[in-house]
Image (cartoon, rainbow, N blue to C red; front, side, top):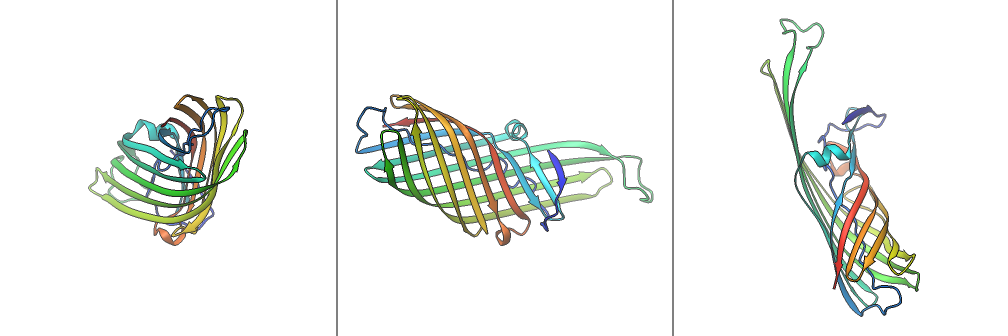
Length: 266
C-alpha cells in the first residue's frame, strides 16, 4: 500500500472503501461457430477479479492498494453474473460482495517537540471494509455476423462502500472512523465478442454514465475459450467512479486488474 500526494481537492478517506470491490465482467458464451444459435439460452458465470484499488481522498492524498494485499486479506467474497438471451433481447444481472479486513501493530517515533513523550509509540490499527455491487441490465442485439456479436446495453449499477478503521496508541490516544457511501448510476454501453475460431474469441464490454456519481465508466477486454456449454475467460477490467457529491470523504475510486471467469450455458 502506498500513499502519494495529489493536487486534487479531496476529502479524508475511507481508506479502502471498496477494496477489490467491486465489480467484474464475464461474457455470455455463444454457441460454437457453425452451429445455429439457440432461440433462448442462459449463462451463469462465477469469476475472480484481482483488482488493485486507487482512491483520491481529502487532504491531497492518494491511496493505492495492490492486488496481492486485497487477496491476502480477503475474509469473504462472492462474484457472479447471470445472462439470459432470447432472440435479440438480452437480460442480465451482476452481483459482487467482498469483505476485507487487516490489522497490525507498528512502533513509531513521536512528533518532534512533544512534551513528556516516550521515546517510541506502539500503534495498533485495524481496517474492515465491505463492498456490495449490483448491476441489472437490458440489451438489444445490434450486430450478428459469423465473426461478431454486439449488444447495445442499458444498465443500473448500485454500489455501496462500508469502511471501519480504528487505531490505538500506547499513550492512550485512539482514533475511529466509520464511513458508508452509496452510488446509483445509469450506464449506456455495449458488450459482445469477435470470433477467432470455433473455440476462441475476444469478448469485450464498454460503458459510461452518471447518476449519484458525477461520472463513471468501465471497460473490459479478454480472451475466451469455449468447449460445449463450458467457457473460460481471462482478461483485464477497469472501472472508475468520480463520486463528487455522492461521498463526503472520497472523491474518486478506480479498480483495475486481471479477471478470470468460468461460465456455463444451458
